[in-house]
Amino acid sequence: MSDTAPTPVADERIKAEPLMSRLMKRPELGAIAGVILVTIFFLFTASSAMFTLSGIINFMEPAAQLGILAVGAALLMIGGEFDLSIGSMVAFSGMVFGVMIVNFGLPLELAIPLAFVAACGAGAVNGTIVLRSGLPSFIVTLAFLFILRGLSLVGLKFFTGGSTQLRGITDAVEGNWLLTIFSGDAFTGLFAWLAEKGWVETFRNGTPKVEGIPIEILWFIAVALLATFVLLKTPFGNWIFAAGGDKNAAMNSGVPVTRVKITLFMITACCATLVAIITVLNLGTTDAQRGDLKEFEAIIAAVIGGCLLTGGYGSAIGAFFGAIIFGMVTIGLTYTNIDGDWFKVFLGAMLLIAVLFNNAIRKRVTGER
Image (cartoon, rainbow, N blue to C red):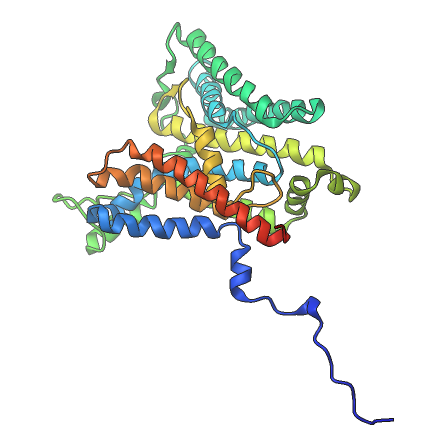
């Protein structure tokens, strides 16, 4: 018998995975690459003003509003469902919010939570119909796209005497402390101080060209970070991935799939309501056409961000970068000599590229041929 100890064999199950392989499996990889490519494109084609502080704020504002919607859409897509009514929900929630302020005279302290309650109710109805009827969420929420848009039109005409716009909101909420949380710019004092020091661009009279960070950008960052934390660090996040990946297996494992999906529909509606409140308070009006087509842009941003159309895979951070791509292209074209109508070509091309890329990643992750 030999006294030589056998040579240990490395266990394949604990073999270190190469860094590149780990990166390739990240759902947000495509969106981050897209941001880099779009940035390089505009560095060569746009005027230098696009990448000044004021230029960055210009494209981050629309990106932030779309991004809040895209994060909600991403969570729902990871859970295996769609919501095509999210754009109409912006108009509907804005109508509810505006009417409570102007027509009913409610303070923001009541109007804001009641608007979210109405959104949760609509989202719960959406989700319940989808799950109880067995109909595809695509069909149910497409119907609600028209229902909510129609209710916004009819409701505003009823409360305004025939107009599809409601005004007077700015006067009704003047001086309320919640305005600083849902509208305007943050850190204005800091930017004024930076202007005095000459560290930011100023006008000839010494006032800064950027007075502060628009509040929707801070909300955008906060929503994306919160959604990422929920997805990656909480049991509910695990349930979302499980419900979207394999509904039957998730139910057999004790995941409350129905409750999870209805909650996701409610969260998506709340994201739309947050955008509605921000825009209503910033503009001082609510409009029945607000949010038009945003449902498609939000879903496309989520797909660019790595969400699979089949569910069970995706990232809130990916949707974050997907929305930034939208903002950069939408506003960036105005800094170039390129016709703005090319944006729609870009929209279709980015969707196709993202779907092909995500499909290739899915096959790599699952080992499909």
